[in-house]
Length: 153
Image (cartoon, rainbow, N blue to C red; front, side, top):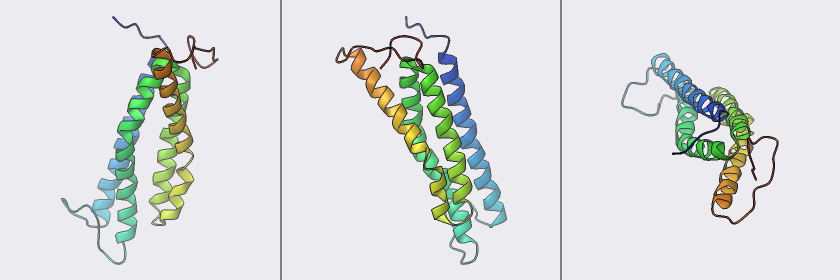
């Protein structure tokens, strides 16, 4: 039986917060569908006046959905190794996706780049996951880290 540290609770709550963020973006798309009269199953608007704004709102949500599985995997795995670090990086990623969506929903795709700082958080989650894998395989010896509950990379 695997025993998780008490601090893994932070990782669980971060994962739930990410689901709430995705739901928030989905609600924004739903409201935009009504506002810009884009009916299901149409994914994008071809309206010359307002199509770009709807399409940007929809793309912000779609892009987040595309990266969410990778985020959840890295959050869960890196959280086994360094739960506080993983949770902190996860919160940064969640905030960055909201900033990304807010900038993108202006209709100016360049403003989505304001949320690019989340890429650094995702990279941190990926590297922490790799470090955990290397440690499990015995390729590196664990080092102490103040963000981890035990020996860590």
